[in-house]
Image (cartoon, rainbow, N blue to C red; front, side, top):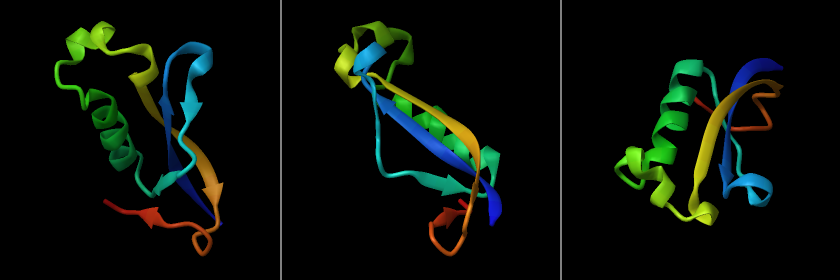
Length: 77
């Protein structure tokens, strides 16, 4: 078992937000946060996020976890 960071991605807003079931695990918090920062910005101008329909809004963050490296794919990049 090793410590890693899981990328949590939520699509939707409020009570309608749902977590994506395909978790991605990273060895480095920096790499995980890179993806967590980029994923919500796929609509371009993040300053206009209020124009994105609530059901399409995306939240992403990294959470520390303890995993078996033989049972999950752990990304280094």
